[in-house]
Amino acid sequence: MDYGKFKYEAAQKEKEARRNQANTILKEVRFRLKIEAHDYTTKLKRAEGFLKAGDKVKAMILFRGREQSRPEQGVRLLRKFAEDVAEFGTVESNPTIDGRNMVMVVAPLKSKSEAKQEQNAVRDAQRADKKQAARDAKADAPAATPAE
Image (cartoon, rainbow, N blue to C red; front, side):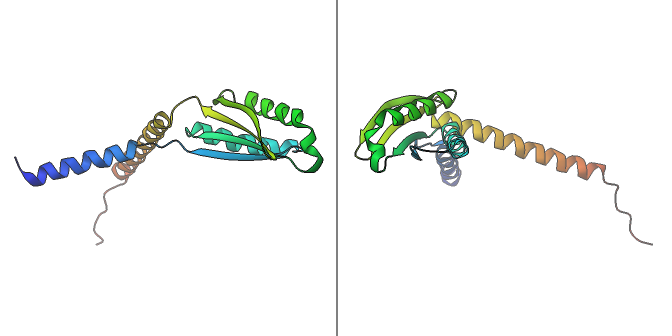
């Protein structure tokens, strides 16, 4: 067996394994207790993007001053957040108070590796479509005739 060929194939397998490797990351979304509707939807969309990509989301409410005496409002906001992202993830840890913050972790429904494989499949399909379009454009173009 050719050693160079063996080495090349091993390198290709390693490259493919690295491409499909996925590490789940904990992303963070921070709120204040008195968050406006538009700001909330912006944070919600950001969290949905993280969950679609297969990352966990840590939703954190920061309490200031007298807000600390109203933890039930923070729980209500986090429950609403959990309901809004229910189609993308499930609550991994219920709201807990950690100093001046209230924290809840939401895990994605599909794993990071599944999301990555789906993303790779979409990318490969787009590349194939581009190549096919380029081939079609080249075939449709009339052959260039030399200038007389």
